[in-house]
Amino acid sequence: MSNEAKPFVAQHAVPNGVVATRWWWVRHAPVREDGGCIYGQKDIGCDTSDRVVFEALGKILPRGAVWYASNLKRTHQTADAIWSAGFPRPERLLQDAAFAEQHLGEWQGLNRAAFFASRPIAVGSYWFAPIDDPAPGGESFLDLYKPRLRRDRAHQHRARRQGRDRGRAWRHHQGGDRACAGQSAGEGARLHHR
Image 1 (cartoon, helix red, strand yellow):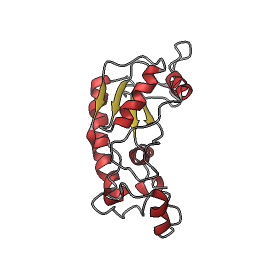
Image 2: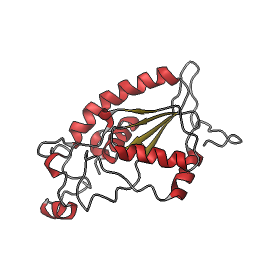
Image 3: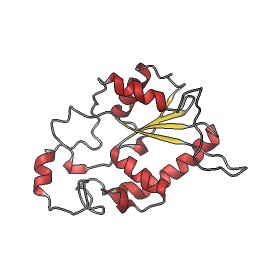
Image 4: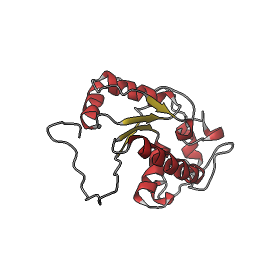
């Protein structure tokens, strides 16, 4: 937590000579202007009206962290809402299109309820399609996961060198969050596809 009186304490010992970097994954605020449609990488806004949520979030995010976001405005709007609720604005917000939501191709813009009603029921999957089934003109979850794994590892390595012991706060998307959670836990993409 960011509470100066009770600083964050690692739950596991960090060996001497090892630099631990804490990542704080924050999904963007809820999207309400999608009209019930699949939006994927469409650049639409989010609802940041619930100030209480952002005030609470600001109490647990680390001060002095390096902040990252994708190129999509919903991640920037979420960061702005956290700062407007009283969290100190960092020097800058690093933006990278490589961390945008999964590209859902021709499914973007389709009515979500009609889309799911037209799909076969896949036991254990709560995403748009089986893990290796790409959207026409888009990407599958595995397409997102594999390059994201390489990009995130390279990016995290650069970020560690830049900030060493500073935390990282990241405005993100559901698909990317699931991919990163699988990487962090050392588990395969299939476990985080649900």
